[in-house]
Image 1: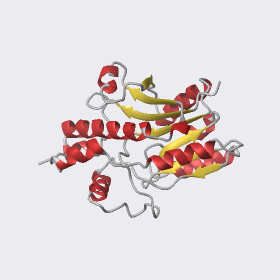
Image 2: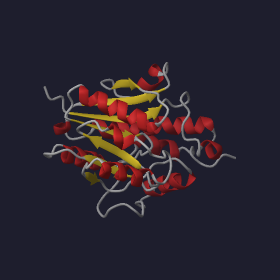
Image 3: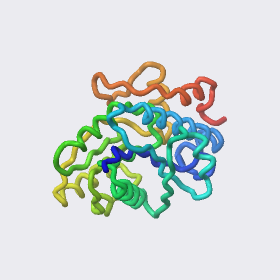
Length: 240
């Protein structure tokens, strides 16, 4: 039986799992943990607001083990958790998407938890593309050379092999892997991850009314209620 789309975020539990190593020296560990929690709340709200036709499950792929209660407090009650801690993000992505497809979902999408204004429309666009006949991979290219979303309808281990993760070559190398196995690629509009001082400034400018310079015409970010409130309260400035 078709279970609809599995749409997941991949994250480390704020304040427990670390993350955002480039922002911690700028903002401090406590502020980064608070910001990460806001990002997760906001992207979860966006995924909850997807069109009903998407169907399926909403999932948080998380680490570390033992942080379940802390993470669930940030998510809507109908979400479920999928623990996955591996050597590389590629191993996490392959294991999780393969598991979701094996459950009977017609497609599996994983979104990073560092894009609080990611438009829900691009996620819906990814699902539509995956539901077209024929196999393919859908990527959401990030402005830093990585990707903010990957969507699959079949498991492909090679897509995640021989990638230098957390570098500006991730998207290019991933497209090379897809070409090697003859897998068609669909690219979504470019968006951005907030993981350093420069992209935090892009977020602040976007919330002040200036869209990212790389945003496609007519594409506007989601409203990140929790993140906006945090920044408006004066959190998210540079550490003294």
